[in-house]
Amino acid sequence: MTPTHFYLVTANPFVEGDPGHAEEGWFIVKRGSVILTDAAGVPLPGDDKRKIERDPLTTAKRLLRARWLRKARSDFNRRLVYPRGGVA
Image: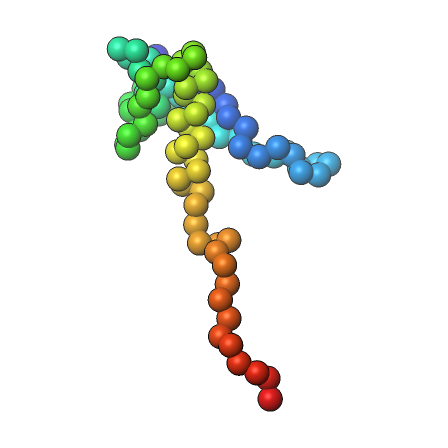
């Protein structure tokens, strides 16, 4: 089965000259479910499968966005805690 190719915009351009950011994805439809795959049609590891909601493309975009958010999370934007103390 040949996977369908699509793009998902994850960050719109912020300033002039900024291209923004997009994720590339592929999906197949099997037994009423959308499955994210690689370009060769091999399902991606993890639970990236969902029943079709409105149409297969919208469902695939939601799956890819959820996958991107899981991957993008890090502790970079964590709250910084400084020790209490005075400066002498």
